[in-house]
Image (cartoon, rainbow, N blue to C red; front, side, top):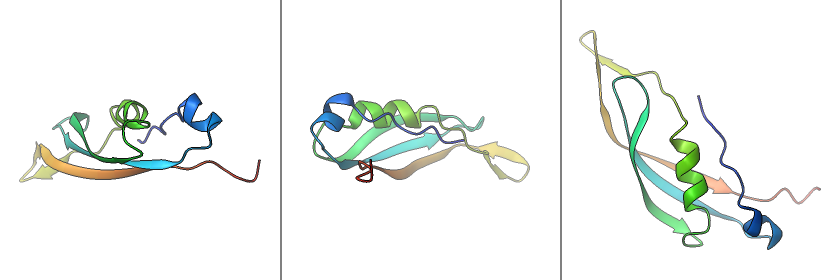
Length: 86
């Protein structure tokens, strides 16, 4: 399950776009934990929205020898772009 990040109002108003690269762990229950921002452009504009969104993501836990295991140091890049067609 992936929750889309909310575009910050100020960034949308100013026409800003960018990305955030996050690192996180996936627990044995499939929830996202230990989220940290590795990189962002522009800095700090989209961080809160990206972290809030990814904390709502759910994964199917990785199973090793019949037991769920924690997956560490997963990475994802969330892109923030405005739709110019509107």
